[in-house]
Image (cartoon, rainbow, N blue to C red):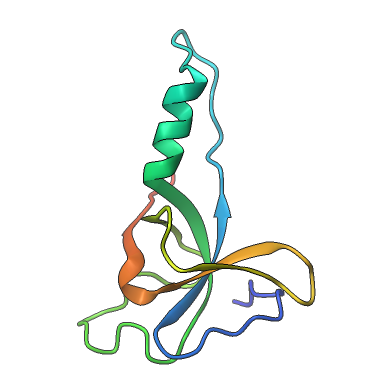
Length: 105
């Protein structure tokens, strides 16, 4: 599966992810902007696009695969612009991926 069309190739333990904002469904309770901002400073959702060759080599199995939705620290890694498509991406260490996000059914 080839999701990486950015022109960026992670090296070593690096993982290339594309941050995204989760879709917010309208409900009875409306969160104030201050609460939304505080939540966005804590976590960052992203899609794994590419994985460096040394990521998770000391672990029994990889934490994530290409195409997985994951949760990373808000300030993990560095932001980079893809030279082929001009979009913003993030390169973070393999240990900065904390969990996979399961799709709601």
